[in-house]
Image 1 (tube, rainbow, N blue to C red):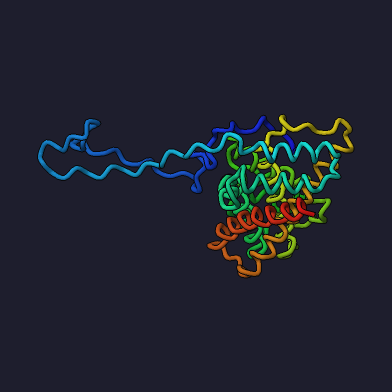
Image 2 (spheres, helix red, strand yellow; image 1 turned 90 degrees about the vertical axis):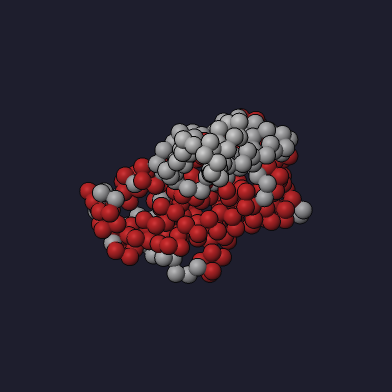
Length: 294
């Protein structure tokens, strides 16, 4: 599925939330302890003073169930083998991914670290362009030369700002989703950034989040471990069925989030995006269960 980040899927023992997948964009490293701090043997300082409290260290993530991907993979293989007609197994694949493979909607959203940050930057830029104008929004990013260019050129020029880095699978997923979103802009009638409405902003973010979740699921399940139909048309139908299913969940999550946060100020964008991802996974789990039980 998608373009370029597919791989065999993470190993079964990989933690549900890898230790490197934080919510921040980085920060200063912890300061080194003073020279008189307790050594590796735990001895107190020579002058008898109280030893300093050691800096907090991230806990070692628990090893996850090595079989947690098998149920989702098996169901998705059956769905793919049907050429996209077996909606029950599509539902089982998605619901099992959220509940078992990812460990629930909240943890599934946490696994989208780079995609959530990229989504917040994308939505923040769109909101700024709507408030102050495209030229001023681009000037802030030293990209004023893109003003007046076609929307696809503007979005391509924003790629390194929206999706900085592509060294990890998580960052690769964020960039792949952004590229897929650019490809779909014209087909959605999104051609003039200067006249974007709130609904069009939502459509852009909806496209992005849909592609990001699709890529995350496919990479986690392991597309190399899933047998796709040999017929190209059937394979495209499988991909489109999955994408439409995910987009329905994302759309519902966005509608809910806009009701709860109608005034999307810059300070609220990150929380809004995080809420959309978590809500989308929860809705996808419920939709998947409903499909599986029909």
